[in-house]
Amino acid sequence: METLRLTVNSNAPHDPASRKAIACAAEILRSGGLLAFPTETVYGLGANALDPAAVGRIFAAKQRPAWDPVIVHIAGPPTANNPMLQQLVTGIPESARKLIAAFWPGPLTLLLPRTAAVPDAVTAGRPLVGIRVPAHPVAYDLIHQAGVPIAAPSANLFSHTSPTTADHVLQDLDGRIDALLDAGPALHGVESTVLDPNQAPMVIYRPGAITADQIRAIAGEVELFKASNQPPAAPMDSLPSPGVGIRHYAPKAHLVLIKAPLADLPHRLSAAFSQHPSNRVGIMLPTEMANAAPKGAIVFPWGHWAAPEELAHALYSGLRKLDDEGCDVIICPVPPAEGIGAAIRDRLNKASWTR
Image (cartoon, rainbow, N blue to C red; front, side, top):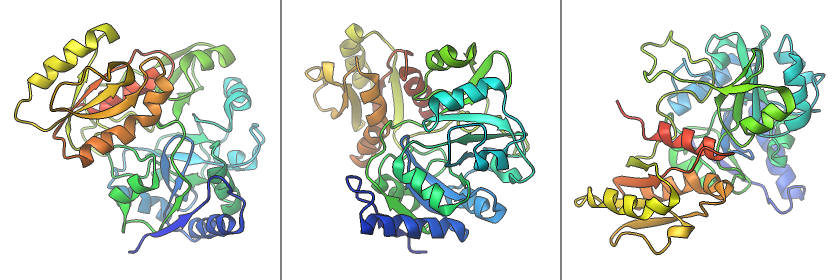
C-alpha cells in the first residue's frame, strides 16, 4: 500500500490545512485503518482499540508478537469519570485517581482492570489494560475527533529503535500502514512510564518521563519491576505490561554500553573504541566530552550529561543517525539512574541485550 503523509503545522495546529489533516487522520482511524501519529513521548502506530481486526493490523505491520500488549490512548477530562476511560476499565484504585489528577494528560500509563470491550489482542489476554491521555495537542485532538480510544505502540518494526520524527516512522513502516500524521519531533524522546497501581507497593514496569520520586510523592510507595533475563519461550508466555520485553529499542549496529562516572568516561570510551579496530564505530558523545572523541570515531553530539532530559530527547535520534552513517558498532555511555536517567538506562540495557 502507499502510505499517505498528512502534515500539521506545529506552530499553527489550528490553521485550515492542519485541521483538515487531523480530520482526515481521524476518519482513517474510525474506518479501521492504521495511522502513525505524534505524541509527546515518541510516534505511535494507532488503530481503533475496540476493533479487534484493526488492532490485529498493528501487530502485522510492526511484526510484533501477540504476547506483547499495547497501550490504549484516550482523550477527555483527567478524571476517573472520563467516558472513554469508563468504557475500558471496571475499577480505578484510589492511588490511580490521585495519579490521574496529577499527571494526565501526560506520559504516564496506568495498568487498570479491563472491561469486556477491550479485545484480548490489546492486553495479550491479560486482565489489565494500559491507558494514558497524551499531552501532545495533536494526539489529543486526533483522539477526540476520532471518538474512539486508540491502541498505539511505538510506530516502528518490533524491537527496533523507537521513532521520534515522521521520517523515522517511514524508515520502518513506509508502505506498511495507511497514513502518517507529521507534526514535527516528539518532545521527551522516550516512551511513557508504565505503572501498576493495583498493588502495594505499586510497580513501575517501564520507567519514563514521570519518575518514581514523582509517583511516590503523589500516591505512595513504588518499586521497579525486576524482569527475568530470559525472553518468552512461547507465545502463551504473555508479558505483564508493554515495554518489558528483554530486547527492545535496538539499533542495527552492535551497541556497547559504558557504565562509569563522567570523569572516567574519556578513558573508558577510548579503550572501548580501540577494541574495534576493523569496525566503523559511532559514539554517543556527551557535550562535556566534545574534545575527547577518539580519532576516527563517528560522533553524535548527544547533549549535556548534566541534563538527562536532553539525553532522553536525542537518544533514539542519535542511535538512528549512527545507523544511517553505516556504523556497525555504537559505543554509548550510560547516565546515572536519576530522574529520567532511569528511563534512558532501561532503554539502553534492552537495546544492547543479546542472547
